[in-house]
Amino acid sequence: MKKFYAAMLFVMGSLMAQAQSPQFITATLVNGGPTFQRPNVGNPPSGLSIYSPTYHVFSFTAPVSGTYTFEANTPSIDNFGALYQGAFNPLAPLSNILRSDDGSSGNPGDNYFISRTLTAGVTYLLVSTSFYSGEYGNYQVKIEGPFSTPLPVEMSAFNASLSAEGQALLNWSTFTEKNCSHYNIQRSVDGLNFSTIGSLKSKALHGNSDVILDYIFIDANPGAINHYRIQQIDLDGKSTYSAIIRLENEKAYSEVMMYPSPVADALHFQFYNEKSSRAEIRVYDLQGRLMMSENFTTEDGVNHQHISLAKLQTGQYFVSLNCNGVVL
Image (cartoon, rainbow, N blue to C red; front, side, top):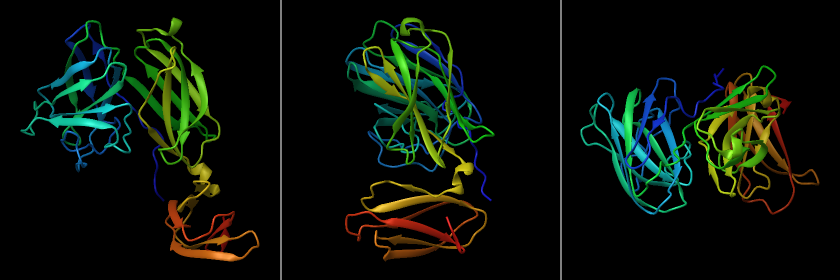
C-alpha cells in the first residue's frame, strides 16, 4: 500500500531583514523543507530541470516603480533564484514566473543575480533555492532598488496535517504583518480552482506587527485530495497568497470523489482500494440506459483515473464504479 505523508512545510528557516536599500535577508535551507521541481534558467524559463531542491518564498509589494536587483551570497551552496509576479505555485513552477538565474559554474558559492523593472503596488515573490537537490546551508540575499524604507518582506510557515479523527489541521505563522485585516483559508481539489472555507482575523494590533504570530484553523471535512492556500487580505482590500500545500486523506477514500461538475470533457475520479483489481466505470442517462463504459486495473491504495465524456450530449448522467464486483 502506498504511504502518504500528511504534513508539508511551506517555509523552514530563519529571517532577518535590515532597513532601507540595500536590504539584506538571511535564511537557512534545511533538510526536510518543502521541495519543488525547479525551473531552468531563463527570462522567462521555458522548461523544468531534473532537480527538486528545498526552497524559501519571500513575498513583498513594490512600493516604487523602478529597477530592483536580487543577489544571493553564500560560500556553502550553489544558489538558484526565481522571481514571480502575483503568486507562486510549487505544483506549477512555470506559472507567473518572470525570470530565473544561477551562476555559471555549478559549484558551491555560485550565486544568482536577478535584475528586473518592477511596478509599484504589484506583489512579487522571490523563490530562493539551490541548483541541486539535497543542498542545505545558510545564505544571504541582497535586495537593492528605489526604496528608502524597508520593503515589507514576509516569510511565513504554513503546515497541514491530519488528526486521528480525519480533520485537517492547518497552522501558519507570520514574522511581520502590515495593514493586515484577515486571512481566508482556501481549498481546492485540483490545485487550480479554490474556494474559501473559512477566515480568521489578524491578531496584529491595528493590522501591524513585527513579532511572530501563530494561527490555527481546522477543516472538519477534508476531501480525499486537498490543496490549501492562505489568502491574506489587507485593510485596503488588497490580497496576497501563500504557497499551495497538498494533503491526502485516506479516510475519505471510502467514497469515490469525482470532479469537476459540470464536466466539459474529462471526468476525474479518485478512490481508495485495498488491493489491485479489475474495475469498470459506467455512465447511464436518466432513463437508465448505458451510454458508455471503460475498464481499467486499480492499484493498491489511492487511485486516480479519468474518463472522457466529450462524445456525450449535454445533459445529466449517473456514474457508477465497479471494483471486483463491488460498486463504490
